[in-house]
Length: 60
Image (cartoon, rainbow, N blue to C red; front, side, top):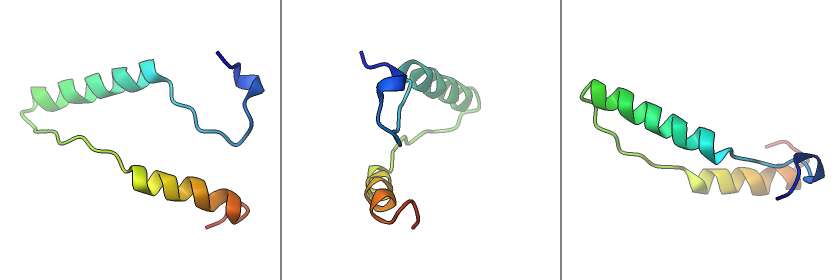
């Protein structure tokens, strides 16, 4: 495992345990209130941001 101090920056990290807990908590809340859930992610937008930022010196 890589230590945080050894990562090149900027870097995006995700704590999988926290992410899973958040997903479970939101789903439980929605279920209690009878709200349907259609989970999705916007990977296309994330990829654009990752490519754009370094090539434009951090600006859009």
